[in-house]
Image 1 (tube, rainbow, N blue to C red):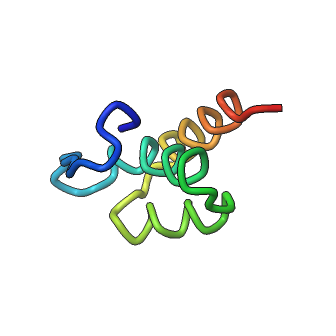
Image 2: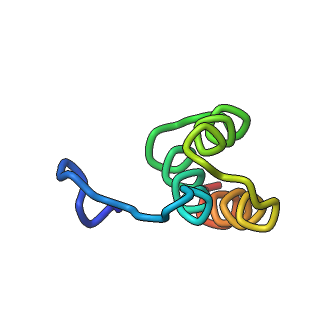
Length: 66
């Protein structure tokens, strides 16, 4: 997503579930969302899996600066 900043990017999942993890990380890292707000946005987009939710939060935590 960072490589295409300022461009339209399309992430696809028929249910929206599998796009939730990357969206959480993107919102937190690149748009300054609070974790709770990023999770809420991803959930509204179709995220249902606790594993994917956890992946997104873990990814954001691992890539967040000091």
